[in-house]
Length: 82
Image (tube, rainbow, N blue to C red):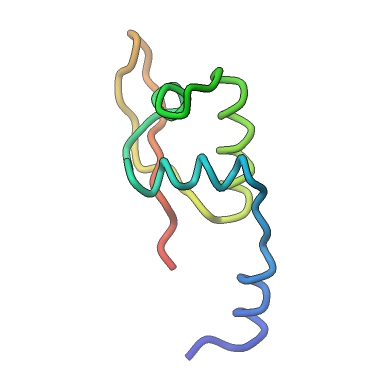
């Protein structure tokens, strides 16, 4: 059973509108890298990287793995469980 304090802490983590948009892409397309997320959203890469970091810091997403993209090794993302 989850303690009420843990539930309160989880629910208190707020994400802003832009983070929510990035999170929705990651939810629907796990395994994308930042550049692919930017492409889906039609954003520049610099608008995505900070949002992904914020979501990581808040425990909403985690690294799924790595892959090759544009000749470079890049991190891929998925939503955290729970």
